[in-house]
Amino acid sequence: MNEAKISVIVAAYNVEQYLHKCIDSILAQTYKNIELILVDDGSPDNSGAICEEYAQKDSRIKVIHKQNGGQATARNVALGVATGDYIGFIDGDDWIEPEMYMRLIETLKKEDADIVQCGWYKVEPTGDKECPYSNCFKEVYTGNKGLDELINSKGGHLNTSVCCKLFKGDLARQVHFSPVRAYEDDEYIFKTVAAAKKVVCIDTPYYNYLNRVGSTMTAKFNLNKIALVTIQRNICELLKTRYPERYNEAQKILCSKQFYILNCLLNADNIAIAPEEAKKLQATIMASYNEYMQNPLMGLNKVMLRLIKYSPAFIWRKVLSWKFK
Image 1 (cartoon, one colour):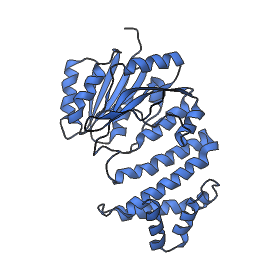
Image 2 (tube, one colour; image 1 turned 30 degrees about the vertical axis):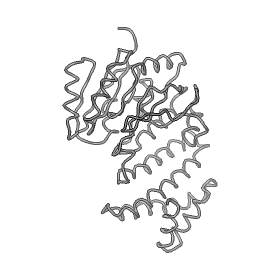
Image 3 (tube, one colour; image 1 turned 90 degrees about the horizontal axis):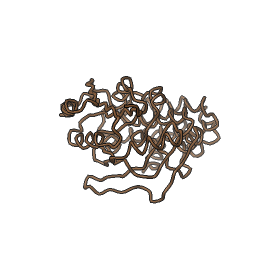
Image 4 (cartoon, helix red, strand yellow; image 1 turned 90 degrees about the vertical axis):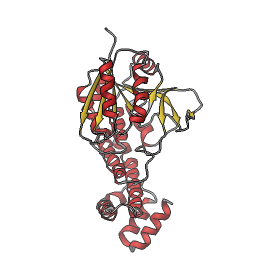
């Protein structure tokens, strides 16, 4: 078989209810030269057994069992063994349309792109599904234009999900996911787009995203979501050297996200160590006070910074709570 190989990576953790549909949709692709890497991330349910069941039936499947470390670490392990010319990621509770990878690889080759993104459906637990846009489009981004879109949307459709995309293998393997348990896609997409010469987005919805209660992104606030700050800080460090013209904007976003997480921690009555984590984050914010105050784009964040530095705690906490009410 001379056609290019696509490595599809699926991290599985507590998704036994959805995993069959996910895997079946990948094996049913009209593009057949696929290597499917299933990573059982120490799942306590039957996800690991389901992965092994499929591996016995299809030689294209590799199964990796590892101690639980989160989706990011599972994907990193899979990237280390992936042999495909191209690489894609699917979440274990989602599924894809039969022609997705055929259309993505055709577009990637035709456009000589490094990354191609397709459209998606948002699917409710009831089965209702909708595409979040109605217009037809094909968007082409250079590295900087793509970063512009990711930093603050200019009306395009490029997003920070890895799952509706296909990457050239060499590009995908040169970037690794930060070992956090939320928002890891954001940094990975920033880094791959920064390294790409060309990114293409097409409108056709081939990916089905299940908007289920209890997933990482729909769950109520927990300590894993502190990663929002870690990831944004890493993005700032990337832009400081790769695209310094946009660094001030990214730093402003970092400060705003720190305020948001600080407010969440201060109001997280069900998390025992939340007060301690809030103190740490407050100290981190204040350590950056002088640098933040010199940022000409910081805007009203400077008011909040002054309140935290100079006013009694009960005052700035009340203002912070009002800000994110």
